[in-house]
Structure formats: C-alpha cells, structure tokens
Image (tube, rainbow, N blue to C red):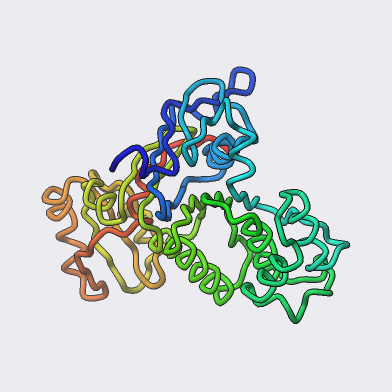
Length: 308
C-alpha cells in the first residue's frame, strides 16, 4: 500500500505520565476507506492513542501523519478534518438535538449550516425528535446524535472510542451499518471496542495491551498467527471441570462460551494425549474447533494484567 493511500501512518508513538508509560512504541497504519478495530483491555492505552491521533494530545515520542497531516506540527488542522466520538456522551444535555448540531456546525464554520443540519437530522433518523432535549434520549439515540455531530464537517477520518458501550443490540447493528456505508464512501474509521462481534465486522484489527501492540491483521490472519488449538467440551459439571482442565500441563486457558468450555493450547498433540481420559467420559461431548478472536485475545493477555 502506498503512503498516499494511508489515512493513518504513525510510528513509535509514546506517552508518559510521570514514571508511567501508557503508550509504548505504538505504530499504526490504516488505509483510506478502511475500518480498523482497536482492541484491548481497559487501561491498555487505546484512548490515549486515539487522542494523540486526532491532535488532542501531543506524544512524548514518535512521529507520523493523519490524513497526510503531521500529528505534531499540524494538530489543529487534523482536528478540523477528523471526527472524534468520545466514550461518554459529550454534547449538551440541556440543548435539543437540533441546537446541539447547530452549535457543533458553528464551531466548525460549516457552510450552509441550516441545510447541513437538516440533512444530518434526516440521514440519522433524528428529524422527528429534533426538538427533544439531548439529556432525555436513550443510549442508542444519544449515539446517533453524537455520530451525526461528528459527521457535520464531513471528516475524512473517524475516531470512535467505544461508541456502542451500553447500547442495545439493534442500535449497535444499525450503527455498524452506518459505519460501513461511511467506509464505502471513503471515510477511514478507527474504532475501539470490547465486543468480539463488532471486531469481526472490521476490515482489520489491532490489539494493544499495557500500551504495546501485541498483534495486528485481519481476523483470519490473527487467528492463524496465534498458533492456538482449541477443543470445546459440553456436558455436566463444567464448573468443576474448568478447575481440573486448567491445571493440566499445556493448557493455556479454559473459558466458558455458552454451554461449552473452550480449552486452548499451543501444544496440540501433547494436550490431545492428556485429554484422552476426559474424552472417554460418556457425560462429556468433545469437539475440535477453530479458535475465535476471544480465544486468541484471552491468551494474549499477560498473566497479571495491569489494572485499568
């Protein structure tokens, strides 16, 4: 991919607060019109990285560009050309939907402001509620309003920080449909999320833990690169079985997925032999399965992850 095709192209980003390094040598490249999922546990440095990318926070080290603009020397220009949706609702709850959008449009000096706001209300399904106070909206409607505000100035890059937290499944699906429509039109999206089903809807993924990128690529690439082998087991007494299986040599993790346990290892042949007595039990049903993203990410976490 040529440099000109990259909407985000940064290397070696670092951010420190006193003696604590919250982002450590993060490099990130995202092509124009791509949706990149930014994943990691709480406190892993996702929000700090996003704020450095959109010009709100100056890195202590590192360099690069967003939309072809230098993240240090042209931070103000990046702010005007990027849309940033924060974790928490950041608009005025005592203003109506229309008043909030009009206010944001004024901040960005949007030409033909009234028409742009009218179009945004229609596009996001907010027209019938435009006089409703933002503070009275449900989580899903607040999300629509926040996204509408991000798009008023027609940004080429959207930076979305856990935008669907606390939103019902229907609203989440509608939100992702809108994100894919935007990407099809050429908008680049970097979105942080904890939901694995949302991660699967991204073109590519970056996983960060304790300020460092541990893996990146498409979903298929990340699963293949993990080297994991996974068995699923169903049956009675899974809680007790979890303790037993976790103590077996070669077992990396035992995690509950619905009515089954996923037993993961990187020593497939050795573990298969170890599991032989359990596989002979008539009360248990075993099946070899393809690792999923959650299996991979569980096993990328340090044994004693830093608190959020």
